[in-house]
Image (cartoon, rainbow, N blue to C red):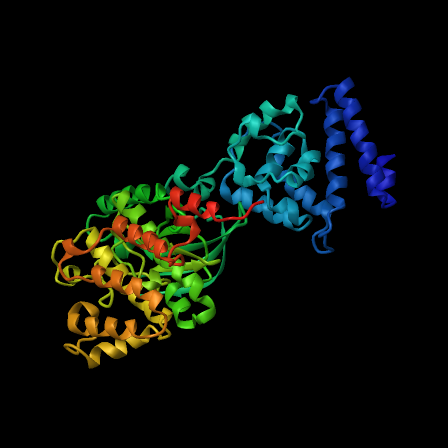
Length: 488
């Protein structure tokens, strides 16, 4: 009767009848009886036939047949699927149901344990392949208790190295062979440089977008490749522990025969350099908060014994009004002098922003980061004062020693700060005083990051409340703010 209803395009009625048949046969004959399995196969065909994306060139029954080739062994004891097979299943599913194609691992498990009819319910409840591996307690409530242990056991069929690439600090650095597909779809190049490339990618597991930074292994792993790679992976472990609102998030890493890849989040709207180039007075209130937020983030990095080593506007992301440090802490840095979306070795430096001791190849420490952030703050302050950040580099060659960089023209810097103090809002001069201390030639005379944030937050006591976002105020500061709220 169900077959007759399907032939009459009465798929909903056929599906309902088959579900009843499956339940009855499971009760009377058992779940593994051949008649029960036959009913389940027919139910699956009916479900596939209702898929909204079925096409004339690849009819649902053809897809069903090809999918069946992946399930010849109806048991959890079969050989585990590899990434290539899982992607093939996803591709076949995309021909008939776009929702199912996004959860091929879930599809495989539910089909293996004869619960494919629950796939839509799983999806509706927000379950996806991203959640693997999962425990019984983490499974959607729609899965009967009698099936939960089988689901957990069957997930070993679909646990591959690709799942590690989005696990952040819980994931592992993985190696992919040439014949092993990466679980990403490239969505466009964000930038290129002499040593590598940064692109926007879409995960085929979570369907989230990330920035992927790749560099040729031959470039960074010269000399003793084994030792260099071990050192690189060790430093990846350092990145994993860095979790802060104003630090770009580490998502995962891998190597393949040609490249080393870092996966980071977010894919930002722009970097600080672009932001400053287009910032107008409407953005000044937001820009003021960046001083405190960046100081707080640097305090965090230094507290974790991490030096950024290449602070500059191109290495600071601006995303949804938030600023984030990126491209830091690695012996193999991912930044070039002309942009945050290019790649170069850390041995290179950015002359405009590097501290005097770095330029002179002298010992450097966290105070070198303070200098670089001071130059960034100077550019931000120039914009607040109604100038462009290019004004700085037009002013310096005409004053002091005539040198173009702050580190080589201290007299020009003093004249520049005096010029900016006389421009526009006097209340913004407090950051100019801070910048002057950050750009002292002698490293140990510069303030620490902790003193920076303390000075910035203390400035609010004089009525200057705009130099730190609420996200980076101390708990006491937040209590003071609540005291001023009228909640009656």
